[in-house]
Image 1 (spheres, helix red, strand yellow):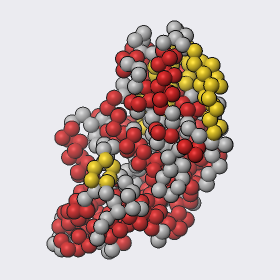
Image 2 (spheres, rainbow, N blue to C red; image 1 turned 30 degrees about the vertical axis):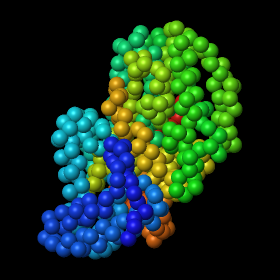
Image 3 (cartoon, rainbow, N blue to C red; image 1 turned 45 degrees about the vertical axis):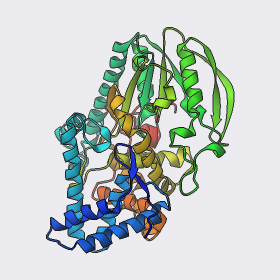
Amino acid sequence: MTCGIKQIVKRDGNVVAYDRERIAIAIFKAATSVGGSDRKEADRLALLVEEKLVGTYGEGGIPSVEEIQDIVETVLIEQGHAKTARAYILYRHERQMARAQRSYAFEVTDNIPYKKIYEVLRWNMDHGCDTIEGLNEIIATGKLPDLIHACERRYDLEVELGAQRFLDHIPEARVFFVAGPSSSSKTTTTIKVSEKLAEAGREFLALNVDHYFFNLEQHPKDEFGDYDYETPHALDLKLIDEHVAALLDGKTIKTPHYDFKTGTRTLNVYDMKLEPNQVLLIDSLHGLYGEMTQSTPDDLKFKLYIETLGQVRNKEGMFMRWADNRLLRRMIRDSWHRNLQPEQTLTHWHYVRRSELKNIIPFIGTVDYLVNSAMPFELPILKARLFKFFPAAMEKFKDEPKRQDAYVRAKRVYEMLKDLTPVEDDSAVPPKSLLREFIGGSEYKY
């Protein structure tokens, strides 16, 4: 049998050759840890995984390691190997920890420093919100407003420290990047950074990178024929690079305007000039992508990276994935900002995540400061708005070959949130909270 999957995306963003044997070995190791000894069965299961991969991503598709491992778990459970599935999940986690120990400075999950993840976990434990059970207790005892206040204070302090780190780099640094994956709250963080810079007497000039999208028909498409806004190559990187260099050189530029409703760009619309006392502020999904500002020396840049570094686990010990947290945020925001149904966001998310692994994660080692935007209190609020969509998605996509990634993701989120007490009333969430960027009601203008 010739496999249609030739390459995969590793956790560090590198693209390498696909090898079914590695899947079979991982399954066999998990099976032997619970008393199994049938290598042929491991080979059969690996072949089933491969068939699902081809069915989901098509001939020539390039799934990520993360997506492959999700499908392995699904196949093991579907084929009646629940014990092996549990052992495989444990094996998967132990492999991650082993890699983290070898690299010392970095946790393997998306190249985030292990020390930072540990700090987040300790903070959650100290505030009793590191488990679903703990969150339920906080809600039941009426202490959710206290947790909201503590979360907001922690986040504001991190942003303040990030802004101060940048100020310490002035006058050498002249460009402040706020970078991070989809729905990590780059926009709110950029606004708050702007406020801190203003308080310090620094003027800023924001470059809106969204206006540099190519016309829609020029955008790359995914395997389903959908236009892909997530790849950096949907942006006119050459023009961004030229404009940033010109601004830092004291020149006046004319930026384009992009109309998301029509998918068209108009060139030379807005005059922009960076004054000697101003800081250039760039909020971009791909702020770490070198090609965007390759003509600008690194010592002129300061890069703040933001991610939902959540450390909340359910009663089975499964942690809420950072990307799943951001998926929930985007499902809401897309429904009112882009007129997309939550189900559409769910099915779109596979190439959002794949683009992150290829075009964002590999460059996290270049950042100057890291901010955690996860708010444990947001989970019960997001559940109240979105949970109903996941059982329906599981039912719809369970037997649909090309949507197995959506099925796996929906099932994982469902299992994570099923025992969490939903919270309908969001009145305790401050009007300047980053969560308001997604659920509405913010004082900020987006």
